[in-house]
Amino acid sequence: MKQVAFPGGQRVPALGQGTWHMGEDQDRHDEEVAAIRLGIDLGLTLIDTAEMYGEGRAEMLVGEAIRGQRDKVFIVTKVYPHHASRVEMHRACNNSLQRLQVDTIDLYLLHWPGEVPTDETVQAFEALQHEGKIRHWGVSNFDLRLMKSLWQVPGGAAAQTDQVLYNLATRGIEWDLLPWQREHRLPVMAYSPFDEGRLLRTRALVAFAKQHAMTPSQVALAWLLAQDGVIAIPKTGHCERVRDNAAALEHRLTAAHLRELDELFPPPKGPSRLAMI
Ligand SMILES: NC(=O)c1ccc[n+]([C@@H]2O[C@H](COP(=O)([O-])OP(=O)(O)OC[C@H]3O[C@@H](n4cnc5c(N)ncnc54)[C@H](OP(=O)(O)O)[C@@H]3O)[C@@H](O)[C@H]2O)c1
Image (cartoon, rainbow, N blue to C red; front, side, top):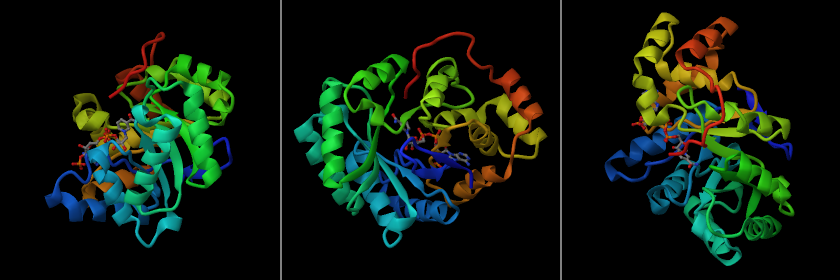
């Protein structure tokens, strides 16, 4: 398994699992738990969730799926921006810990920028770290301007990642944010690697995948895995799709493949607003 290092030295697999919309349908419960467990067995041990997902139901599902194997997994969860003050974050974190049934969150992210002053949010993260409730912290949906201002805040440069939308069809960060993060050795966590599934149905990707004896999801993930300092967190609640996604690790795209994909899904030619879902 390819690994990616956070600035603090922690290494994690470059392919993890997302959980948005999991835990929301009781009829899908057993298969979703099985899918996360299968993913862990296949090495996709970084699991991304959030207090927002199903208003806590995704965290509860993750808690159930990881029971008995806490030591194998790296848990990422996120706090709502309106919970990013010192008092509110403490409460939100305790609730997440309870739902996840763990003593510590490995990486706690601010889900998107909000109204609470950044220095207060950084202090809230530091207080949780001090208490041992979180090991590391980071941000999500921060554009380059916000990352630079985070770096000016006392303690702000201790952030371990910026989790952003990044996939073959959404490559805007390659212009500015991704190079900046690489310069600071800050991995990008690429969310919605399949553009919520839409990418997998594009004619160009389907044809490329067929031509090269891969599935569209394997191409989408192998392309992200070919990028330095990028962690991909695809979501699926189906076991056969977990296998499909994990098999992306067996495909190494060649320089010729990457050139062909650049033709089909061109890199940015200038700056753009950070895309978000
Ligand atoms: N920080 C943020 O603001 C933010 C925003 C969005 C997402 N995220 C994180 O990133 C994760 C991934 O993003 P996402 O859930 O938005 O979308 P995604 O991973 O790009 O795509 C998920 C969709 O693709 C389908 N799928 C997965 N594997 C497949 C396969 N092998 N073949 C065919 N279809 C497949 C899934 O269907 P089934 O599940 O039905 O199989 C689901 O409909 C989230 O779950 C969440 O953890 C973070």
